[in-house]
Length: 245
Image (tube, rainbow, N blue to C red; front, side):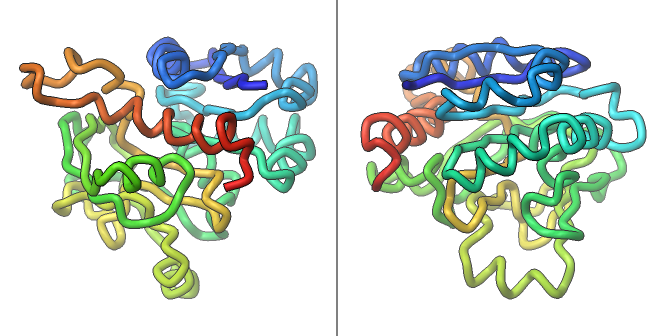
């Protein structure tokens, strides 16, 4: 079993790149419309190794980025999703998908992604430090990679963490990736968060948008497509190691 389930539809617009990245990593990707996921009450999770909520503008970001999709998932597949995560299922939320996960409270009550400090949409490549533990980054660290470059494109990517959670998050290593510079005003320069077991991760930059070397703006044969390596790291843990390491 090596299925990667990738949600699609209703404003999600990065499912194709995500499909390519997961396939190159070794998974058998399956895109699924949100409505079909809801209709089946999340039954598709039964044989899923990795669930991906891709980037985009789900439901046009009405009421706030990721809020409507989060509400639909909570009321439509909340029980199945909780069972899947509690059972060790892996979830990756990218950009809008990260916003959905925060709206669901996956990383703690009060953890939110709000408007960038510049008050505008940002579209650029950013340098990132690998700072925490996650199945999506452990493979990179084992191979000696401590930083990577990925594109980011968001208007509401500034992470805010309530004071009562900050010390625990820092001590647990919940911040998996940090911006090398303060690009949007995020607390502690956080670009990605991970659950305590490292199997649920949300990040604002787009790893699926760097799944081939040619996608780097200065592509010259010297830039290893580290975006896809996040998916390969997860594949190694979930499939090759059977999720036991």
